[in-house]
Length: 378
Ligand SMILES: Cc1cc2nc3c(=O)[nH]c(=O)nc-3n(C[C@H](O)[C@H](O)[C@H](O)COP(=O)(O)OP(=O)(O)OC[C@H]3O[C@@H](n4cnc5c(N)ncnc54)[C@H](O)[C@@H]3O)c2cc1C
Image (cartoon, rainbow, N blue to C red; front, top):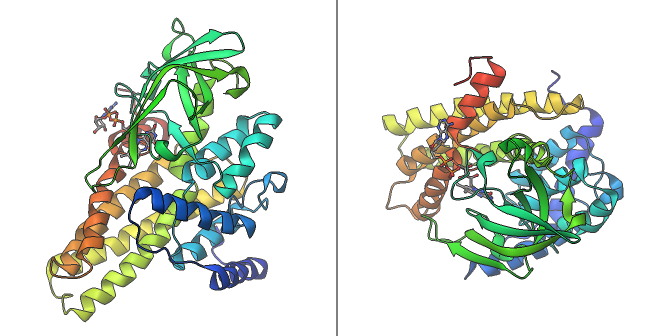
């Protein structure tokens, strides 16, 4: 593994920094989630105009055909500049790569462009009240009709469904087949008749999640991604991208910035002698170093043209532990009287989701045990 940058890569990093220096916008404080989304759309459009969204996508679909290393460099520079994360994350990180891998030419031409500009926001309609970790146990049905299917069932925890134009949805198209073989991967028009979206309030007080109910929602034939009843294989592409590619790089840099700020805060406040503070900061430093090494290993795989595999579960787990421990330490560093308390309290509440979202920690450990370590199943 070669950890140094070539002159071309250094030049690319400088180009990113120069663009951000000229164009970076700081968000104002928002009165509502809707205002935040509207601002996020404008900011993402500006980035897309500079061709700084979906860098690794082929140039034919609005990307730059960037290498995994260039993407990592971009993510590092972007995050270090403290730019706001993109609003259409499901579109860019999950739906887009899945369409690129499994979509038809028509589907790519229709859907990929507006993902980059955030003209069309996407959501992920996978989890159900009875199917989260055991996703293949889902019961939303798609019944065949002329020219498509009628979708009936319920999804839950659907982030940003209330702002989404399209959703990537797993539905059962063969109720007699074994559970992994009777699922299809459909693109659902979130404005279609028969959809009811009900926001759910989280512990942060915000309502980014939703329950989504389908009552005979029509999905046309050409919205099937991959083959009929082949949805599980397509979903695995989505899930591997959710756990293992761009997200941990961004999070690594976010937390490097956090750690730097917390260390400075603790030093300025004379709190470095408090054992919880010094131990917590040291632990965060070590866990961040571990995450960085996992990220470099992922990058090496991607640079060789390999897909992210079950190793992405190790990275997900490393990130989860690191963000939760760092968030605990942050509260010890700042203390409730600090003006920074509100920001860190929110981050601490958010960190609780890390061991659930994108696959729980228990499930990641099972994947690591069975698929990487070869331990017996069960
Ligand atoms: C912030 C956030 C955003 C999300 N956004 C979306 C989204 O946009 N779209 C979407 O589809 N979903 C989304 N989800 C849902 C997420 O994918 C699920 O919460 C997750 O897959 C876990 O499923 P569950 O909540 O049904 O828990 P369950 O699967 O019911 O698990 C409950 C508990 O049992 C444990 N458990 C379950 N099975 C096993 C097993 N085999 N072995 C050991 N332990 C087990 C779990 O680890 C967990 O502790 C989001 C969740 C969060 C927290």
